[in-house]
Amino acid sequence: MPEKPDRLREEAVKHFNRTIDLMQEGKPEESLEALQKAENAAQEAKSDAILFHTLKARGQILQSLGRLEEALDTYVFSLKISYKLLSEDPGNELYKDTIRLNLNNIGNLGNIFQRAGNFILSKQCYETGLEICQKLLDSHPENTFYQMYAGNTLNNLGELLFSVGQIEEAKEKYEKALEIYEKLLQNYPEDTEYLSDKEMTLNNLGILFSQKEMNFLYIRVYKTNIVSIERNKKDTK
Image (cartoon, rainbow, N blue to C red; front, side, top):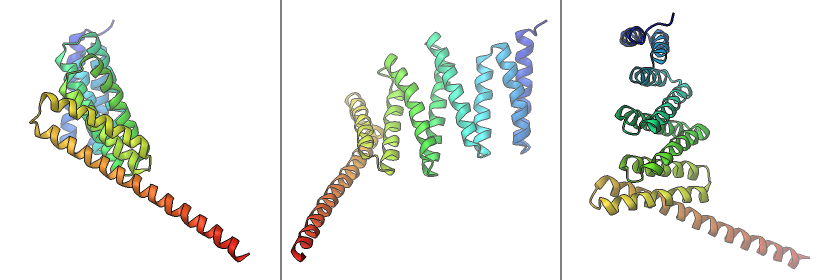
């Protein structure tokens, strides 16, 4: 006979509290085991609130242990579940808060991977966050959090692409970010955060155009030198 939802919720809370105790005792591996039991019970009880708390804790524990790819998988899993549930219940504040939390966690991991020189995982973080965020913007185009997240993530993705020499792709991301900041500033012209982000993106574009100009000049000098060398060869024959 299946356990009743109330009983399962009690089990989930008990295991979650045990997780907290183990974390405070400095036993992260044991806390993950207790957390898995809490997550299983929460899923059986269909308790979204407890489930999202367990996923949040799991991601944080994994991140603290340096198991960043596993933490990313956890945040993405939680993000996709909360996005699906929000589409079914658009007014649910728990789902909205969980989406914002996971978008921020995924973006922060993208920054960590970028600083560590892990291009592939950093790009994956930024693109995953942007994919969900764009879907949210399609249905909530005036939501300032989603706009800011998209703008900041596009800027970060532009920096990442620029760092590996993908100049045109980086330019495209910067320009999209700039469009978002300009739209925000139309509605909030004195917002210092939006102004600062716009300045940052303009600065990145300036650096990019300087690099393009240097590359252009380098190519011109290179071609000029090649022509000169060929002429010298002909003159010495």
